[in-house]
Length: 52
Image (tube, rainbow, N blue to C red; front, side):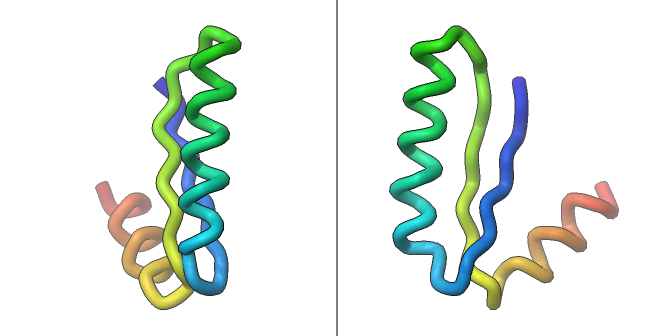
């Protein structure tokens, strides 16, 4: 499974994009998990993923 992280200013419209990417990938036969985060949470997400 492929993990994809999208970061943007607020995260709201990006969550729609994340859902569309997951659906398109599934149609093409790829398994992926797409997460969308706003900038305020981005630092926490990046630090958590690099430390695990």
